[in-house]
Image (cartoon, rainbow, N blue to C red; front, top):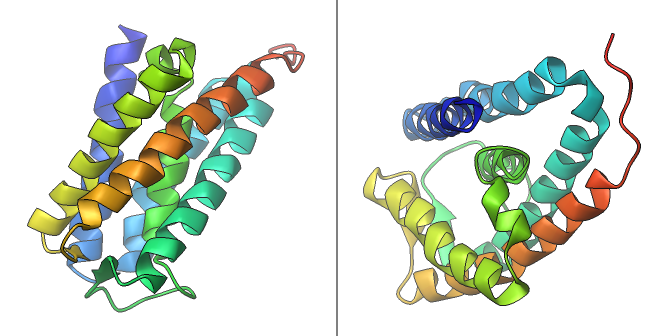
Length: 174
């Protein structure tokens, strides 16, 4: 039941973020994914450091990958508030996606690197295509191919990061 509730919360965070970004309210857009991440950190105190580290890893990977896509001209947005070469709400979505690997998307952590890459190559472009259909992202021709490559690389790496962080000693719950 926890996994189902987490999947619903993760989707709610995505929708929150995309709909507020569409309205060009990027500050509010950040709140959905950040609430999801900090909800995990606060409701799972024994996992707090792992959740935060995995969120940072996800945000950094997303910033790096999406920055390459933006600079190559495959990804853009009509959303006004930009932070450098990419959008802050996208980094927040990446952080939330990484944190979902600790619960609702945890099955991907146990996949072989090839299967994790395949899952990323399918699921990542679906999210970006959804953002484009909702007029938040603008995708150039062949952009989804490069998004698939980005996610095919990112998901196995995030899974490895999650496995590595699982080796950290748990904090005693208060």
